[in-house]
Structure formats: structure tokens, C-alpha cells
Amino acid sequence: MKFIDLHCDTASRIFYEKLNLNHKKCKVNIENLKRGENLGQVFAFFIEKESIEDPYDEFIKLYNSFTQEISKNTGEIEIVRNTAELKNAEKSGRIGAFLSIEEGEVIKGDIQKLRTVYDMGIRIITITWNYQNSLGYPNVGYTYRNKGLTRKGVEVIEECEALGIIPDVSHLSDAGFYDLIRICQKPFIASHSNAREITEHPRNLDDNMIKLLAEKGGVMGINFCSDFLGNESVSSIEEMICHIKHIRNIGGIDVLALGSDFDGIHNEVEIENASEFNKLYLALKQNHFKELEIEKIFYKNVLRVFEENFK
Image 1 (cartoon, one colour):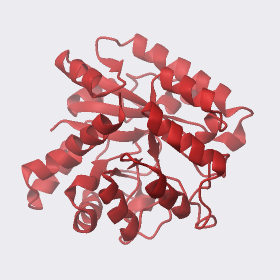
Image 2 (tube, one colour):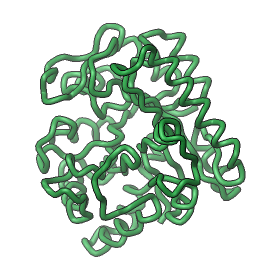
Image 3 (cartoon, rainbow, N blue to C red):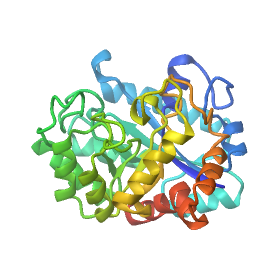
């Protein structure tokens, strides 16, 4: 079954490890995406702001590297900015690549920079990573649990909605999440987060968050990292199903999506790469999920959120 994956770190891995979109080392490469029947892949430009001098300059380097890589493979993959472009890519047999930024400090709270990255094709911004920034606070060990968005963060979120950029609350503090519930008029996402009730971790969403995200019309992408799934060193499909069932029970089927975090996680995963999402499809069937429910998890819910946000 075709699928949309809301988060991978392949673009950053290509840059820092001097790889390419066809390299076997990459869990998300063109061959794996095609074999897995990928409809759309969100490629994140991950910036570890504490280890570099200028997050925006670093983003530009990553962006230039990845867009050059796309240009070498135009027959197989293309950057898309909305669902109409995604449908055109699908018709022509190409993978649709959406672009995201994983670290809101790239724009430094500058609305003009936000508009610039929008014009460059960025359609999703993860507000924080693991560090406090000018927009808000991260969910690292609950240290900043009660600290919400800054005033500048609120301005940026409002401008994101006006432009057609989806805010991503994975990595954001709990209070920051509730700020988005209050501020946002459109659905937003948690691109790679699981259920805190099943696996106690600040990166996961608690049941109240899941309910509110569902009411907002947003989605959360099931993360394949073992830290967020359970206690095992190998991320199992059984654990993924456990989270999916719980999230469905709390928020309904329409809040579920996929956010593998491939090429950003280092543990072994039963779904080894982007070619093997069908393993999850078969497991969901065996667990009595209906075909329409699986379609919603795999791509239809994300398409709905994209259509409500992207211009």
C-alpha cells in the first residue's frame, strides 16, 4: 500500500556523511521508496544549533546539498509543495518530496526569513529540537514542561498558518503544545511522536494531547525509534501496533499517521527501511484493522491535513 512518511533525517545524513539518494546506507533512498510504494516523503533538514555557529547558514548548506541531489534524480523524485503537485508527481511515476526544518531557530524568529524558507519550498517546521530557542522550549526530561511559546513564537506560528506552513510539535514542551491548540485555526502535526500512556517519555503525547490534536484535525506520526516505542532494543511491529491501537482508542483513526524517523535513529527496526512498510500493513490487517482505516493511517489522514494547510 502507498504511504506518506512525515519524518526522516536522510537529507542531513546525505550532507554530513557525503552520501546520496541512491546510497545503500540510507534507509530512505530512491530504490527503497519505490519498492515500498511511497507516495510522499517528508525530508527534514535537521540542525543541531548548539554545535554550529549559524543555524540559518547551516540550513542553506543542507538545502543546497539536497536540492542538488534531487536535480540528479529528476526522473525518480521531485520536490512538491502541495497536494496538487503530489498528485502530478504520482501520475508521472515520481516520488513526492516535501521539505521540512527540524529546529525553529533556523529562522531566528525573523518573519522575513520564515517567508524566505516558505518560498524555498519548506512546508513543515518542527518548532524546537532538544534546545530552548527564540520560539519556545523543548520536551527534554520534562525540564521545560510548563514553559510555552515565547511572544516571538506565537507570532511565527500565526505567520506559518497565514503562509501555509504546518507547525510540528514533536520535540516541543507540553505547554507549547497547548499554546498551539489555543492559537492554531488549522490542523497541525506531531510528525514523529507516540503515546505517552504506552511508553512514558516526554517526546510522546499524553492522552489529553492526543484527544485535543484529534479535535483540531491534526495527526501524529508513529515513530519507529525504540526509545519511544517500548523497552526493547529492537523496534518491533508489535510495539507499533500497541501504540496505534491506543491512539485509535483515545483520538480515533483520523489522528494516526506515520513518521518513521529513518536515518535519524540508530537502533534496529523490524521494518528495516522505507521498502518494508508493507510489513506494518499486513500486521494491521492481522489485527483486524479495516482497509479504510489502514489507508487513513498510511496516507489519507496526512493528505487531508496537507490539503487544509498547503496552498
